[in-house]
Length: 177
Image (cartoon, rainbow, N blue to C red; front, side):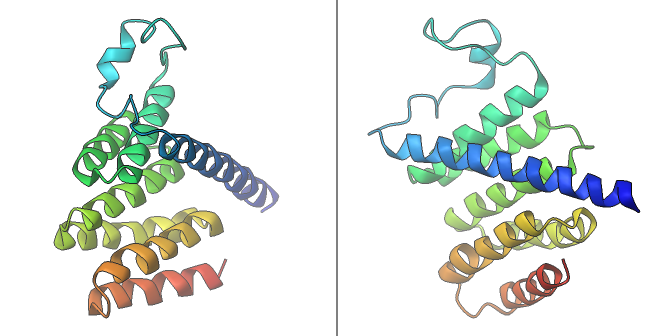
């Protein structure tokens, strides 16, 4: 039992660090008129240094983080279709075993789908997140999902019964953590 709670504690701090990194990226992207790396593909970085500065990702996790960060930038710049593409690429670059990381990117993809007006796809994706959140048992991820439902999905589609049901289930999950 002790190893399980230590594992949850590690994942919680891991997710918190990733949330902070994501927020840092999105903040820096909103501070400039355009985010110069939003249109860049991951393959542009594999060959070496971009523009002669910075380091290129050398591991799949680095690439996944980079793709996730560009997706957040695209969302902040009002480019939900571009964000959706980048979140999908981030999910493809993230190993299946890294469930919390995948959940985080999936919430981002659901946000991009909602912002682009694809309600059915956003709801389908959100449905798939609830059991994953119950498995991971991360308060931070569950609250992030609840926030997306409140400020994203239900803000754009207020009173939608499926969205309301998801919110109720996610809120209950959050209270049980």
